Image 1: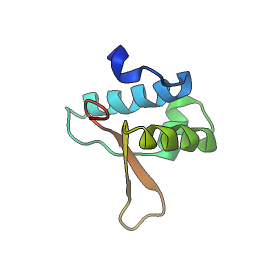
Image 2: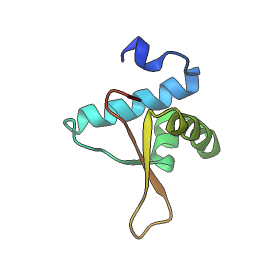
Image 3: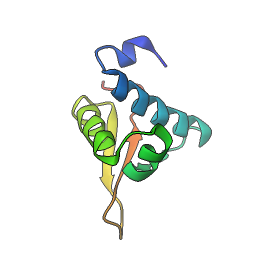
Image 4: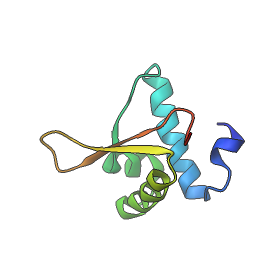
Amino acid sequence: MNRAYTAGLAAPQTAILALLVEVERVAGGCHAWVTVQRLAQWSGMSQSGVRDQLTALTRAGHVDKRAAAGRRAALFRAIPGGKQ
């Protein structure tokens, strides 16, 4: 992951962002949306900890959030190239 892309991010934020970028890579570069629950499982963090990191990443323009149709859970994905 590009150091300039993650400059100023805390270690937990970088870890979550790295997971989201890896999901995009494995999905072949298509928009791969992930739930907080799945990120918590993969990262070993609590769901509330993941939510806190995602909130900060969303505000910083590194992560995109959308409501999941027919579900209560929100979905998240990395914004390719980060904040423009």
